Amino acid sequence: MLNPTNLRPPLRKHPSSKLAELFSGERKPCADTQGRYFIDRDGSNFGAVLEFLRSERLPSENIQEIHREAVYYNIKPLIKQLEETPPMFGELVGRQQFLSRVPHYRENIEVLVRVARAEAIAVRRSTVMICVLRREEDLSLYEDAINSLDAEKESVVTFGPWKAAVSVRDLLDCVKMDIESQGYKVDIQPHIREKSFLSKSYDFFYEVSFSWW
Image (cartoon, rainbow, N blue to C red; front, side, top):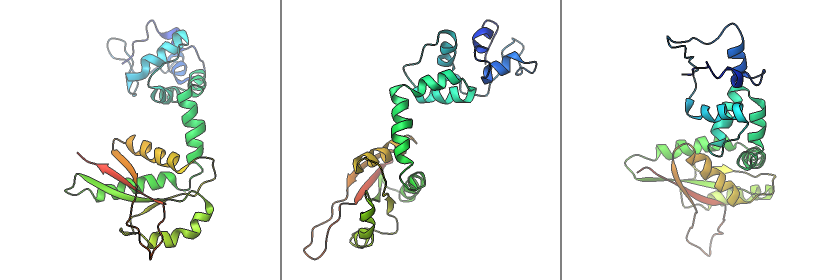
């Protein structure tokens, strides 16, 4: 709930924002008996938005969450300044630009989680194998590499190749970050198989372990 009696000047500060539109026009949001308006948003970060409207002071915490609120309310100066902070700049310009060059990255994350959940019956941990192909030339080795596995091949999730100057470790860090952002606890380690004189080993494979309790 929001009581804008003394807040109308800052709420109207940026005319193109949704807040200015809500509280400047004739059709205002519905108010309760105490004159408080209801906006159907999580209010936990609205204080930081209001502080910026009052003093142009940027928040130091929960940057991405406040950025989402700024986008929702269309407060363009706040959006711009937040996107120039190191955390948002690194996420939007660095990490997300890299991930846009990894084919089917988002879909693969969904498949990875879905396979792990399917394997989670009556176990504390479930492990999903992923294959990471860094370069285009790795594709020519894919079939031999898959056939060399001593694990179930049908559930292997494959990432890459990509055209960006980042390493396999960078990709694995992104996978871990994006799965953990959904509330899961995961660990990623190289898949180690017994060496054999009769078969070649490949370093494309990693085990993503989900801990359920």
